[in-house]
Image (tube, rainbow, N blue to C red):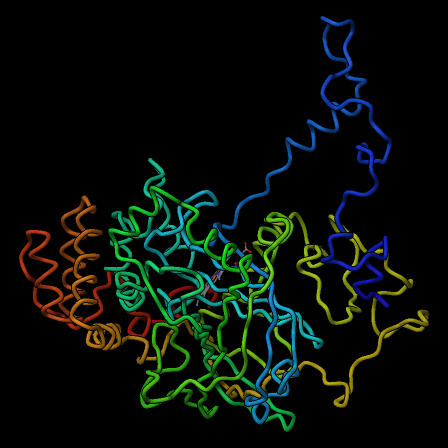
Length: 539
Ligand code: HEM
């Protein structure tokens, strides 16, 4: 059987310091030959040229030349820690997921990140923060790959490359790194007004958190929980920090970026080293899994919408404690590979079109980023549940697989793994019915066309001080936009959210106050209105 132990040739448990590459007291080549000198190359005479024959010189330089791997295409800058998750048992009636059982402890690894900056960028920029947690459960790994903002910019993953292209630095000058202070970002969000909800969260103090330890986290999409009877419940995941939610002011953020661009990663590591372990409660909002998948008119498949916690309170289901810093940034923080499709029995996805695209994207990008299809064998990515798959060979294959017949059924392998019966707790796909006769369409529900009611709700929920911060943020960021037409279009979007917000930002920019339109300000017709399914012959 292909257990994690069996896949560690030395038999040393993965994740322990002993599993490190360095063994023995002497410096050696990669092949274990002891070295006398690592500072002087072999030369033809003391003043002569270096000899190609010097294996150690070539090995050392060649390996160094290939030390870098591509950074993540988004969320490149991150900091992470190990910890433990303890279930409260409160979710047991609606899910068979064993790690949520009362008192059950599961090892975890959490990586926080900014979205847009490169690996070496600063921490306290105005941006969304990633909050990704890998639960190494006994029943298979569960990755909760969320953000610190409960909604997303777009409703359909097909636009993800577009929003990222718009928000990343301009292709010509490669500036700036901080979110939103440039024309393409505001061009995108003013044209694709579904982005306005996420954007107003970014312009609020949530966009400049005080510490990773003081951030909420959100699964954003609606997921499913399935119990042993096969009953399905819709859920939204929330992380609630024990330290409360805190931000810095914009002026503080600017100063910190100058003085200590590593502020957030230092804060996390220092707190853990000092024994001040950060904690978050995991909670869920639950909804009946009806065919409509809406709650009081809010479309639960629309990732630009929240369900206010006043309407559906968050119920705590477990506690996360981060209690151990990483010992090697590259091996752990850089090589960890999250995937929203890593789900244990008892949790499943929904048809949210953003989530559906994510299910494809992560593994695809990781094949490039981590050099082939076997990154699940990197220690930080190894499941803690026994693995007995039929995946074979490929670049960076570490496993020495047993058996001759990696296919099923076969009549040759004594070790041929079994399929799980119901009693063995297999992964269960939610029993979702798809209406017979449904057409292939690119249409989206009309409920996806409401782009302004929730940004308005957010604005109205802010205190006067927080509203002033939001006005200041829009005014500062929009003042960096060169194109007048983009500023004016974004002001129309603000007029649709709230008249005062729009008027104050317009005054700050020295521009006139436009009228609200309440129409999505889009260049192309909304897919709901277009001749969907007939645009392309292949549909
Ligand atoms: C990475 C969250 C939407 C593609 C990440 C990470 C987080 C995250 C937290 C960093 C993971 C890490 O720390 O290693 C989210 C959330 C989304 C969202 C909450 C929406 C609700 C999308 C969409 C796509 C996408 C729609 C593509 C269709 C990626 C890619 C990476 C990434 C390619 C880099 C992964 C890697 O290189 O390992 N995302 N994301 N994301 N996300 Fe998303």
